[in-house]
Amino acid sequence: MTDGREPSFLGSPDLDRTVGLVLELAAQLHTERHRRIVLEATLRERGLLGDDEMARAAADPQVIAAVAEALDRAQRRLFDVITELDDVAGPLRPADESTAERVHEERTG
Image 1 (cartoon, helix red, strand yellow):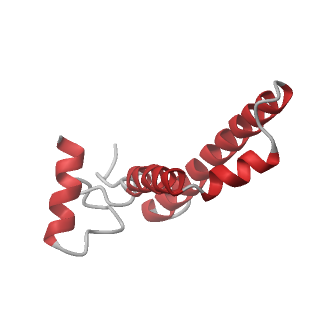
Image 2 (cartoon, rainbow, N blue to C red):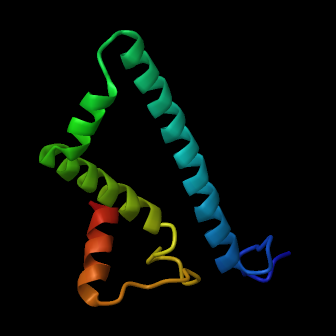
């Protein structure tokens, strides 16, 4: 029988969630890095990508904007792990009502 508290493997549910977030980030980084290396190698093998094209693309304002938007979306998804509004044990809470409303709308559609 349990006492109703969230189980903890590292002594604290908050620490468990933090470690879970770090491990999720590490897994995502490994996957993204692997896919990028494979993609770059394939493009180079086929003569479709050189270092100069990569540098040009990295400096392109449209590419920079697209990357920033994708990063923002990814960060919002990751921070859902620690800003769970329906979890009373969530370690962080939104700083103000507008943030709470935005997070709620994103989660409920």
